[in-house]
Length: 521
Image (tube, rainbow, N blue to C red; front, top):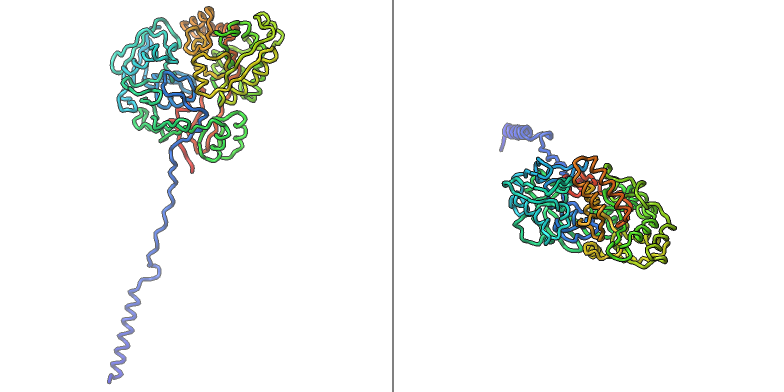
């Protein structure tokens, strides 16, 4: 049997073990704590800008396409020798700098290492080819008259191009900034109306007709760090109601809108509306190669019955200004409309002129309008009503956009409502559209005295002389009425709050998008 001493010793042993065990156990404050959760990282916003486009492009060849629906896309894929900044100043693009050693010589020094989307380096031979292609009659380039004064083009070396002109031509440098003068790869063998190989910040990924055009970032673009977007997709939405719905529901980031819609959208949270005074003007064109519009008295009578102020108020809701052939945004070149003939309505004189022309009771005619441009359709309807006052019965022919552009090119119209971009030099407004040899003179209009005034303006060596000749030319042109110049509108863009770096500009440079980023959800 155990003695009491053995029992006591055993009890002491248990107590000591328990005490040691308790001392070695971790304290409550030593218990490992779970790691704090990491703060959620901000969601990465896809850098693909979705643009609701109002019209389908009619082709992608920069030398051939007059339609704005094409040019806004072409200008993303190509560069010219020069470009225009927001102040309408000519600045370097593919040319780093240039010299004008005498009135008929221009020498351009190119950036080195610029790549086409195919990977080939752009050189002086490509520039030479581009301009010779524009001047080749077989190309039928819309820009041919822009460079008609060019006598010779030389690739002096790999990065130097020399232009020799037939005579002094003041608009030459400005014309090199035109999208129509975009530099193309001389070795590219694909159809430029459907494919491309430009040097621009974006390259063509796909074009699905009647649906969308997708451009993707060109990683080797010569401006380092640009573009900031990865892609731009132009989604075709001809109806403004569809564009507005897509904008409000976040399906697109940006679109153009009318003055009425701009007013409504200004109240929407999360949407910004931006505007600027455009360099465009609306017009009523008359084919001087067809009867009865070959008679200047008929055209003058029409000018005296068309109430331009009613068009400004009704069609443009007052968000436009009356204009001559050179819009007011070109401040130093624009003739004041108060000084232009036949802008005031005079029904009695209009009827008298029609009678003198042999149409005492009026006549019937047709008026082509682009069916998917509401402003053009509205303008056509106002003019239809106004001309009825002097017995002119007008049948409006709403025309799909591609067919409308083709009719314009082919001069297949009696009358046509449209919009023109005046460009940034008055020579475009006056010579390009109305000189006898102007590439865009689709009106069969010709007047020797007018041509001489424009040519003197082109050759003048001082700003003051150019202004004098072009002012006289504007007054002469308006007195002959191949077009009625109606309104120069403000334009409106609506965009989501998350679109940053977008600045509208009269030059159209807002479509470059090289500094645009997307933020937010």
